[in-house]
Length: 352
Ligand SMILES: C[S@@+](CC[C@H](N)C(=O)[O-])C[C@H]1O[C@@H](n2cnc3c(N)ncnc32)[C@H](O)[C@@H]1O
Image (cartoon, rainbow, N blue to C red; front, side, top):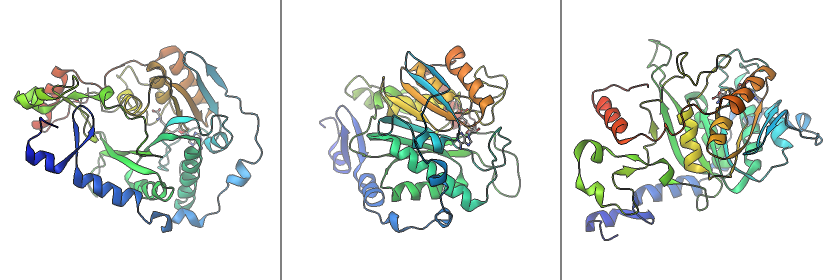
């Protein structure tokens, strides 16, 4: 810690060898809120609805993925993820779950009615979350992409299941539907929870990006970091900038059948930061197959579930025949970072 000034050393702890520091206050706060809380006593609306799981997942039907490929092992199951997760042979062995569930916003999915009464929707959410937790290895991480109207319930439910909130990231986008009844929606939440916060697959080095200090200000302090990370830092917990916009019709990543396709950069950041090569990644709601596509490009094994036959077939074509289009895009070069920061300072975000 020799390179830290005395005042900095007083307020910061070194949380990994080589140069990353966390303010002590944040750490203590996280401990109070995440580990020692009384969250399990909290009652939520969805608790009032009987779970359909006993009816849905009785017996252990032979589990065979509809699609499977090797190099790395990749499987896609077709059906209701609750039934599939409950019977998955890999239960307890999944390193990373990433879930981007339906938001209950009346999206016309094929094979899924996206408009349940609120209590039933919460019940559905708690059920698949519980099943996903059962799939995790002891060091496993669970990411959930969720909108404002359900995020509080998801956080409380995961806390009452004693998972630790590692990061509450926000994806900021600029394509929310125009409205004048309140501010325009321009974010979704990317929640990272861990089973054991002391023992997760966290890889800061895989996601480093150039700092404002190095790109804009030429600040020499940024060059004093150890371990080859000079001028770099982990990304902020608000995600935006070049390539983080809508996957619009002119974007070569776009898969025409699918609603709500996430950009590859989103999954790349999640997968690189919280899994290792060879790890097993699980996505209960495949959609266009973004998770498995990115997992495969970065040498992770993966399992996805999709309720619609049509979407599943399209996702599999993408996963195995098209592949990742923009590998490495989530890690901005020095020049891209500089341009992005300059635009941000001008109040603009380049959607790429
Ligand atoms: C928000 S989309 C996922 C988008 C995906 N992240 C992407 O980048 O393409 C949700 C998907 O979950 C599927 N789905 C809805 N309910 C499901 C269920 N119970 N089990 C499995 N899949 C389901 C829908 O058909 C839809 O394709």
